[in-house]
Structures are given as structure tokens and as C-alpha cells.
Image 1 (cartoon, one colour):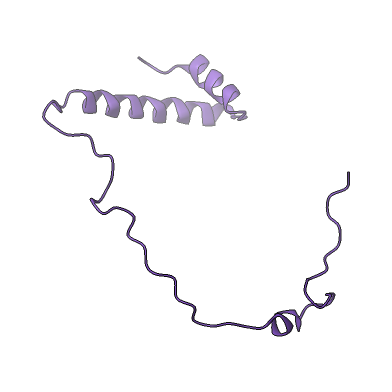
Image 2 (cartoon, one colour):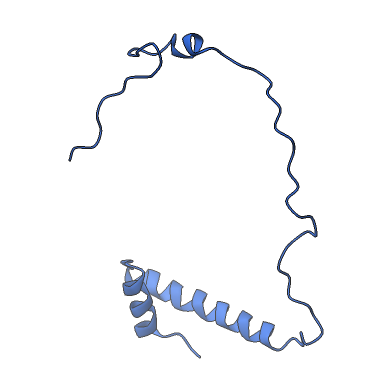
Amino acid sequence: MIIDKETVEKVANLARLELAADEKEGMIKDMNKILDFMAKLNEIDTSGVEPLIYMTDEVNVLRDDVVKQQITTEDGLKNSPKHTNEYFLVPKVIEK
């Protein structure tokens, strides 16, 4: 398959891109290089190669949660410009 100007324009339209004439020429070259590289990859015999699904054999290596520092509600609200005794007060953002 060879990429031409019409193909680049179609892909640009699908991607909602506006390309100048010189950018289209550059895209034609780049996309043809990509297709040439993919053709080279298709020449490689991968019949005995297992597909790589995960980079490691480890399964869900998680650490234990440890509480390291606690602050009180009062300390957490000290620097808030507006608050009640329990919550931050913020301006309404979404109107219905």
C-alpha cells in the first residue's frame, strides 16, 4: 500500500487535523516510512514466539498500608478561608 495525498487528507479529516500543503508532503513521507517498517516486521518469522502480555511475572505486588502521619480536622481546616467545624466551603461551580 502506498500513501498518497488523498489518503493523507482522509486521515487528517478523520483526526480533525488541518494540514498545510508542505505538512501533507511530510506526512506522505512519514506514513510511507511507517508502512515500509511494518512490511519489514511482517517478514520476520514469529511462529515460535509467545506473545508478550505482561512485562513481569509478578502478580499484584502491593505494600501494606501504614499510617505515618495523622492530622486533626481542626489542623486540616486552619488554612481554609471558609469552613465549618467539619468541612471546607467552596463556591458552587455547576449550575443546574
